[in-house]
Each structure stands twice: as C-alpha cells, then as structure tokens.
Image 1 (tube, rainbow, N blue to C red):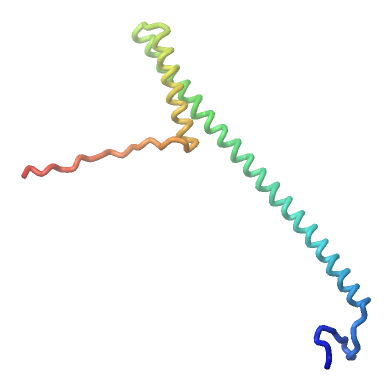
Image 2: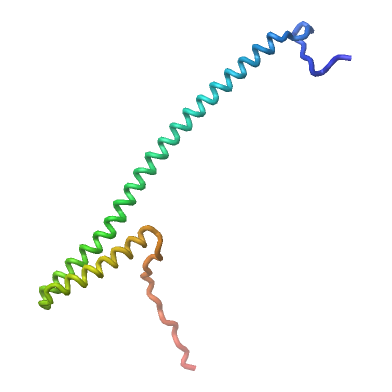
Length: 131
C-alpha cells in the first residue's frame, strides 16, 4: 500500500529532497520579507500615534495653564478695583489674588477631569399641596 505522507510529482515519481529544500528556502525568504514589512508598518503607525499624542498633550497643557492663569489675573484685577474703591490698599489685592488662585486651581481640576464640573441647573421647587 502507498504511503499517504509521501508526495508524488506529475509523473508519479516521488519528489526529491532538493525540491523540498527549495520550497523551505522560499518559505523562509517569504517569512523574512513579511517580518520586515510588518516591522516597517509598525514603526510608521507608532510615529503617527506619537506625533498626534504629542500635539494633543501640548494643547491640553496650554489649556490647563490658561485656566489657572486666567483665575489669578481675574483675582488681581478685581483686587485692584476693590483697593481703589474702598481705599484698602494692599488687602483687597492680596485677598482677591488668593481667591483667584483658588478659583484657578478649581478650574484646573475641573478641566483635567479630577473634580466634578459646575452645575448650572435651576432646581424648581415642587408645588406644595394645600390639602
């Protein structure tokens, strides 16, 4: 009975080991080319992701710094106005800058998602029954 694991060529003869060696060499060459192409594709994808994440991180850094600085500047301006109106020379400015610092930190935490956002909902009172 014939061995089913052995291959025969077109003429019914058993294939030679040189044909198997040639096939193995071609398969190894194909594997090497596939690995090289996938490595290059991975590097391209990684560089695209890295550049977009760098731009996103830079934008978020500018946004967060603007949130903080705007609170401190607004506090300073309000403090200066309070000092001029009520003649409380350094105290209005000092107190309002501290309040602006706190407001800037709160805005910073909200923008970063570490604190709950402010709510602007108007809560309506439920109508009371007179009965």
